[in-house]
Image (cartoon, rainbow, N blue to C red; front, side, top):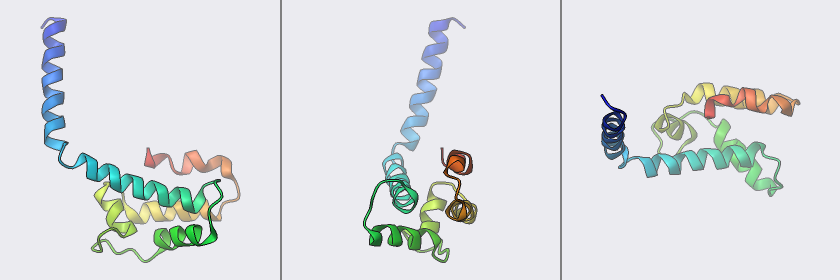
Length: 110
């Protein structure tokens, strides 16, 4: 197979996979943004009003309700993340005083 043939083959395969996932990609991106914003509000260095931080932490650490749309657990599952694992790791981060380990503890979000 020549280089040009290989490129065309992989390009068509990529396009097919993009077409099959294009219907859900914007929704997944939105859910990822919701989760990301909540984590940033709860643990970020930016100054937020207290009620924003409190609300984000309550949402993250609430009882896991995977059948309730837009709950923490529901969003995690929609993003193929284990909500219990995610919640436990965020609890570990919350109780930690060492900010240097943030990247290590939350690497699974990448």
